[in-house]
Image 1 (tube, one colour):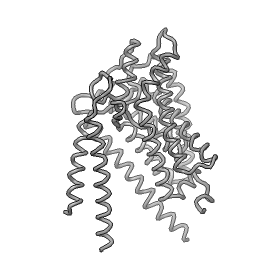
Image 2 (spheres, one colour):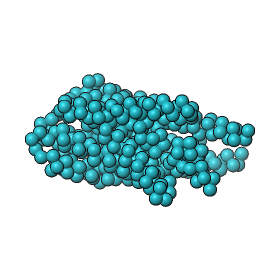
Image 3 (tube, chains in turn purple, blue):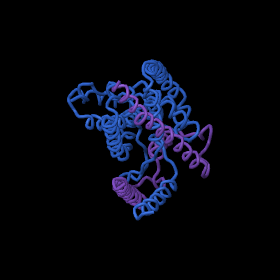
Image 4 (cartoon, helix red, strand yellow):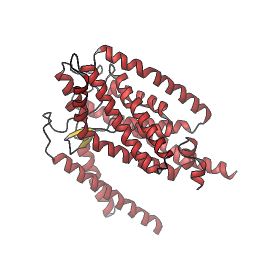
Length: 110
Length: 251
């Protein structure tokens, strides 16, 4: 029991440290002023490099065939994709780390 | 609820709010940027690599069932990482790592290309990220160039006696940088019109550097971390995937 409590406080201490570092990083990045990109705050390199040079040479990006870049729809789709991707990653990780390693250690014993 | 837990919940909420309040930004070549002949050329170049990836995946999955969860994990990693915008304060822009370095090390370059093709297709269809006309070009830059650069860097450094962490770090860096180098070639050759190729190529490549130089380092750290973690948790898997020799694990 005492081991479990020690593990719990160690785990939460680590979590707090990681979250603090992440928060500091996010505050730092969101409060920084940009160099002259001219495309608003934090443009992607597709906007600040790819589309910028393409436009200079007479090429412009088309609207995507399935346009999810409308209002908060894109956020929803990204959230959905992140959830599905995260589930797939976690499920595969568990299969690899818990179930398969147990299987391989069993087969090693026999 | 103890003090640490309360603090962790508050911080998680704050971080989640900050993360989800920004809009997504990409690095793939967007829909319609490349003229049709160039888009077709890059697609034609990508098809044989994807076909070889399918063949290799079927071959490996037939031999070893544990290959499937590893491919599933790598597919999820490449998909998530390649649509995760990371702000780079030195440049004031956002971009993302590719994940092809770690995928190529663990499942081989051809299967890594196949994984990338699937991830790019889903992103082009549903996330307004990349495009269907530029799918081939994006496969060649992120999948082919990224995977092979990462794979060969890792193999060469391991042969020269580098540790797993160092070889993984360099593989991640070169996979990322090779992707953007190839994107610069694709973009410069596609959009230049009558202008000379080289000046435009250098201009685009230099514009990528402030963002991709630090992101390459981040990708290197992620790749090294993942290889070392797998070595600690499942060294037998690395032996099976021929990343390590059995003698190295025994030692």
